[in-house]
Amino acid sequence: MIYEMTIQFRVTDITNGQAWYEGLFQRKPDFIPHEGFAEWEIIPGCWLQVAEGTPTPGNGPLRLGVTDIEAERNRMVNEYGAEPFEVHSRKEVPVKWGTFSDPWGNRIGFFETLDKDEMNERIEMVLKK
Image 1: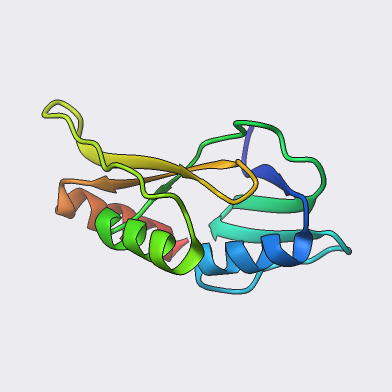
Image 2: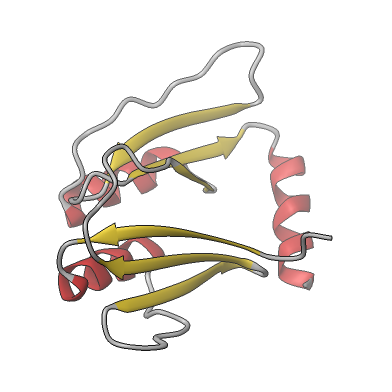
């Protein structure tokens, strides 16, 4: 039985890496077990570990559901130096999506569910846990 998951991204400088991911998540890490390592519980049971080390080229993407993809794209580009990225949509796909990289080349994707009732149900489900 799988009950939890983690994904790890490596950064060459943990101080800058931690600061950048604090900006992405808009909060401090949930756990810093030792030097060179920081963890965020993104949603219950889903953790991102940021570790100092040699980044893996093209690692990811870690896809994150957001309530307003354009606002989040603008925030990441304007406040955290992410390269501008296109937001995609297709008639048959129930989300809009876009992918960018952190300063170390780890790929991150945002997606926004187009059915707002469905999105709100998912948010409620996560908040209850």
